Image (tube, rainbow, N blue to C red):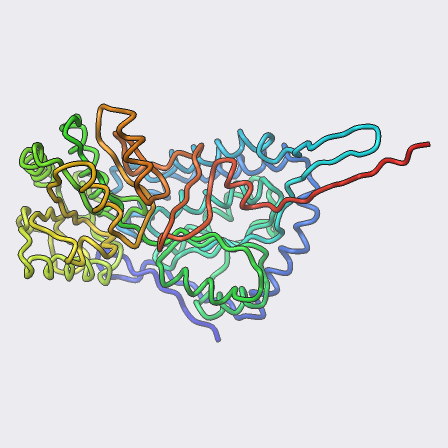
Length: 460
């Protein structure tokens, strides 16, 4: 059955774009075309694939003047921030630069009798299910290395950012990548699950909710299809007694509020040493009170609406529950707060881990701040979570950060930094944040499989 996907703009609630979904048979036909095209694509020299992918990346950059206002319309990020091409290009460029080394054969040994080595070979067809919050950067994390490694790619983008996949496909095709090698498709959830269960794909990469990740695992059960999952987060920041306070406040609050708090690795809870707590809160409140909530198309706007009214409703519910349980709100309702998608960013104190706002993913512009006595208490609180994506530590002592970092259940440890994805490092998580790893050399390992060669020579 064909359904119509509708992108509802958070700016005014109007339908900004709509596309019909494919039937199972039509989508399966496209997946089979990708499988047919994969052999010839993988047979191309690696450098040719790298050049074509980077030409596609450049073609996306050439569209940036159109992309930035389009993103504001689709998901509400203010145009003043200029889109995502910087990170998009940085990630693709790094994966292109390391490809020759990351995909090189692993020599095991050769003598007069044997030659032994391990190749990295592509899975085949990689299915990328991308999220709306950073729709270009999250997609390129997998699209670029998958194509460079010799896979073909089928991209399904989120309904909230319905036009992103089309733009990427148009750009990559204009650069010379064959249409069957990189495809953008529109699917509903049931058809997506049916395709995975049918083994239409050889590897699935999903970024989204915990519920969505569970649905992917259920669909793939018994197929032995590889799955990479980046799901929810509740990322903590910890400000130690020797921290650079001004830098910590500025970075952590930006990490909590940028993009209306809709960041995979956004800061959702902050623990501050008791000696710095009052000053940290005072400075944090001053920063947020300086924000201008409003229309993302207005260059003066610093924080736009959340991408969807239902996302804002969940954040409002968490805040209301926390206040009812004794939390203190520090930010007065802003004039543009409409009770719908436009939501006042909020700082909460007197919070505890009995409150949902400190335990459940908020994915919005709210952060709870707690005072802690020492490293041990901070570690216990940071680990008191079902999620584990990143943690941000603030100290002048590298050894201390490494020691605390070793004790935290997380995928990435930051010191004096937050909310950044370094393409040289593996992007990964633990617990309900999911499994797998993107970018870095490990990203290539996850998008290929090892193939061993044990060759006995004929001695004459």
